[in-house]
Amino acid sequence: MIDKRGVARRSPLHWGIESRPMSDVPALEILLDGWRGWMPPAELGAVLAAHAGRSWQIADSPKLPAGADPAYTLAGDALGLGDQRGLACALAGGYEATPCHWMAGRDHVLLQPALQPTPRETAALLASAREVLEGVELHCDDHACWAVRADFDLATPGPLGALGRNVGALLPMAQTPVAAKQFFNLLQMVWHDHPVNEARAQAGIAPINALWLCGQPKALAIGPTRPRAALIPTPGWRSRRLIDAAASGADQRLLWLESVREALLQGQTEITAAARADLQLLGRVLAAVPGHQAVTVTVTGPDGARCVHSAAQPTGFGRLLTRLRRRSGATMLLQHLFE
Image (cartoon, rainbow, N blue to C red; front, side):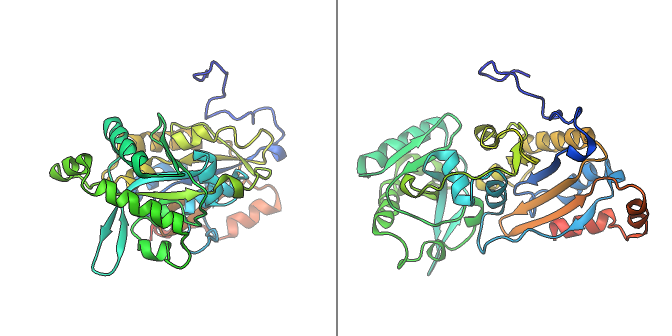
């Protein structure tokens, strides 16, 4: 397979495991970003059922910091990028900025999803924001990745971890730098009655009146550590951007499927074509995994993560113990992943 730069890449179904001794076959981690609480259990159940011979078992749920963006935290750790802020910084070169809608209540403001602005809307919103912002760089690239470079320091979760939560709790007055408060206030003022948002409101689309920031200023950026896993190529722009973040020789492989994350951040409730494509890719990857390769499937959502595990096929006495051990049925596995 040849990428856009003319560089040969391996297919997602081949990771150089054919010539390795069985003991050296890298374990596979599958990160289903945002699927918990959104993707109907039957959709994932059908894929896992096709590989029921792997004897899926309930695994311990990963321990995450309170209020974290689960997938960003887990992927950042696996790729040696630190925490969720380190991963967002690697994606955007500063703060990853997510267009969103801050919905005001009686005594609080909730962070709500917003349909991704079109290129024309993006250009208009960027131009108006740049006229009032000082000491802040605001950009958006061809992948619709918004980035902010500023000197203030915000310790905030990734966008999916912030979705639906009280902005005041995430950005407490006493701990939010003055420069950051000014940034958010100026955006609110200049975008409040912007023609783009007036047109969106008339069309029944949530206006974009804020950006959610997650990342690190360059002065505080922490250098990457040795990655535990190397990414498998997928259509997702985050995976493509970070494909070289984990060098060869990592002990594991990571398949990060992020299409559902995009759907959640845009307020979509139906299964998208991209999510269907991710399901198909998941099935192909599982079909190509040798029986002696360990696989962990982690389903994340805004409120946490759950795992199931398929261990490498044991031999001898270990195989006998596995047969005697109680295994989890498909219904129990799905209840564990999605409850």
